[in-house]
Length: 116
Image 1 (cartoon, helix red, strand yellow):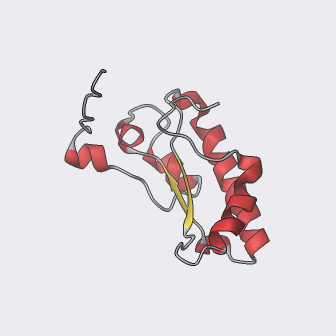
Image 2 (tube, rainbow, N blue to C red):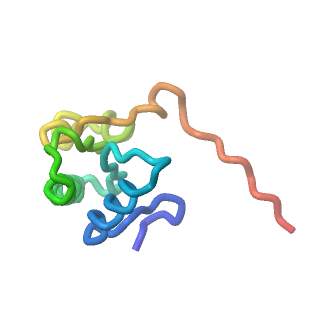
């Protein structure tokens, strides 16, 4: 169950099937996997280990090296987190990409929905 209905993806057990489907789409190019960590940082290592495991399964199924499958784990809030869970942890867990857009550009402003 997604924690936010605006941000969700595929169940880990379906990851390989989705990537195989993407590989068969002529106008798409698979380059890696991404996760948005939970707001509760105590679960972050578990989430990132799960994505790293998905990368291993995808790499094996596609017969590619793990280095050919990017891992995007971590965002601005993770970068700014001052406790023991830090950016270094994300990199140590295999992240090849950390998204820090809101630190650079500021928080997104979403348009208000019109009520009918």
